[in-house]
Image (cartoon, rainbow, N blue to C red; front, side):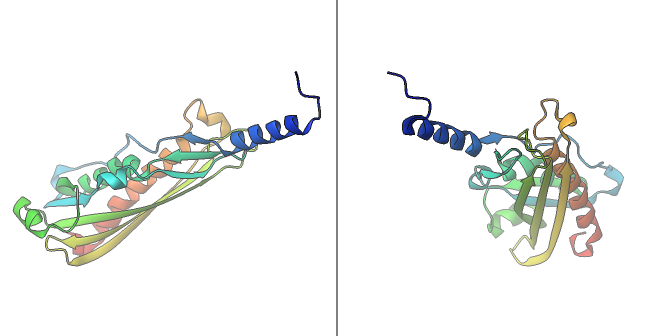
Amino acid sequence: MPFPLFSPARLLATAVLAALLAGCAHPITMITETAPPRSQAHLVPKKVAYVMTDALRDQRVTSAGGSGDRVSYYPYRDLEKSIRDALRAVYRDVVVLRAAGDAKANEAAGVSLVFTPQIKTDSSSSSWITWPPTSFTAEVSCMVSDAAGAEVARVRATGNGTAEFGEFNGDYGLAARRAARQLTSQLSSEIRRNEKLR
């Protein structure tokens, strides 16, 4: 038997459906293929490492999109390439560590510096009609230690990306990837600028 047009059951079902639609999180990616230039003649002749555990890669973040929706992504997994590209633009050799704090392994591998990143992200949208974010911010802060684990320096970089509705064309993470590109470039510049990291 169909519900009457304005029955409590029909109104409740409509409200639940609206809440589910408003609360959905659309997946996007921040991965960018653009990397800072790498000039062999100007690379620092050191082997460095960055820390990226499986637990970090599996961290999922949800932030604001447009029209009341949200977007979801994996900031450490998505920005790992950006961090590696920024380091490769400065240093001769770059390796990844699955865990931090193994001084003996670092020394045996010939690692001079270890970069441990912390990532923060945020997004928003000026659109009340479409869900992709039109503004995205990504920030990475790296504590840099020597092979023994003693802190040497800290570096920080931020990327801001924007995209308008007419630019998406199915590329719903466009603002996020633009933020990632800017972050990569800024991170390599900040590392080069720090004399303690040469």
